Length: 141
Image (cartoon, rainbow, N blue to C red; front, side, top):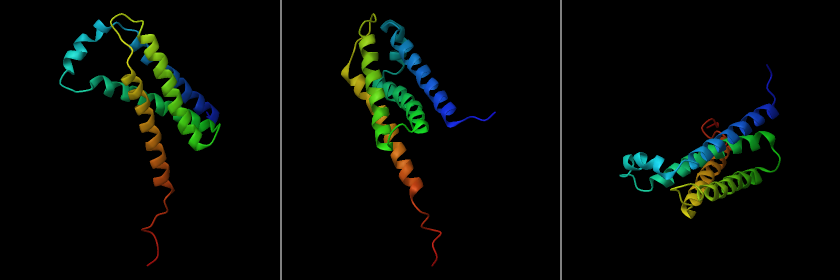
């Protein structure tokens, strides 16, 4: 079976949408469902922030990969678009979460969401730069 670049981009897009559904499902649970988890990680400062960064880091990997394969725009705009998707979905998620019993909408959560996306984009740019460097060690003496 030959998989084209479009098919792979489509698969990454499906993964992104599936991950968004997973985030939505987590946000749709009442706050009391997380009482035990909060007790377990009470020793970890900013545990909620770490979870948000991780969830949106994974989402942004999926979104970035789909954009990279489609190449709809320049690489810089792909990076900004990835961060924008995380920002918009983070805002929508917090808006939705504000109507869930025992949950609150917090700006720090959106900041953490965007931070996860920024980390992905920064890693991607550094990886591209690292891979683009010529091999200095193989030069003639």
